[in-house]
Image (tube, rainbow, N blue to C red; front, side, top):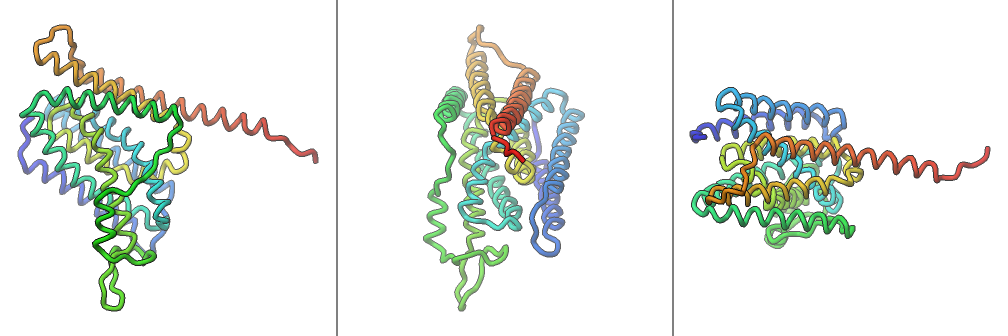
Length: 328
């Protein structure tokens, strides 16, 4: 699909307007916690936006391109759930007040969107020039899938380690001891200092970019159209902030999600290698149609989510039954 440059700017401009309205509505008056009801409304709104965009693609470019967008969007949104575990850890480590967490996530995700845009442009250019990278991407996704399953089976806990960028910011800029409202910089005794708010925003943005190391190759396994890759990532990131508040403690109950994500990454990795072989003239290597990819990805997330919630309910019931009751 040949997309003019103005189309990218139109999508980016539209999303920025929506985010500005979102931030204005949420930040009116005194800072307050983001409620579950608010999160539910906003998640529904952003998912509806993605569906509308996919519908426009369907009407203008056909079912094929729309299918690629929906498959990419569901994949990126699903993989983003894994990001939320780390976001929870970052918020806890930096002791971010709940009233300011939505702003931290918003700015952090905006940083991630800019960096992902650059990463997507570089990836698209590299794949167009070096077709053998499809094999590398495929092998990397399979390797990542195996590591996810292995880590889950071994009971390894996800943790946050400060990256080079974060360590540099801490050394380069004087930082206040505590938060100063939602300000990212403040002037104290004539000296400009950054607050922990800026540090945690950079932590969220840069950590999300690390997650893009598997999510970007995954979506390139579904489509090589850079416009669809970018828009699928953008719409997935748009709803990520509200999903953080909507899921809340539910994340701890989604015990099978890691297996689902690993299966999706492994499937796309095999798909990438198979289609690269097919393109090289290997007749026995099949091409996987986008409708099948979309069905497998969507079905996997539904099955693992339902199975996780059922297990959580069964475990809670067993816990209640094993708790001795006191005689009145």
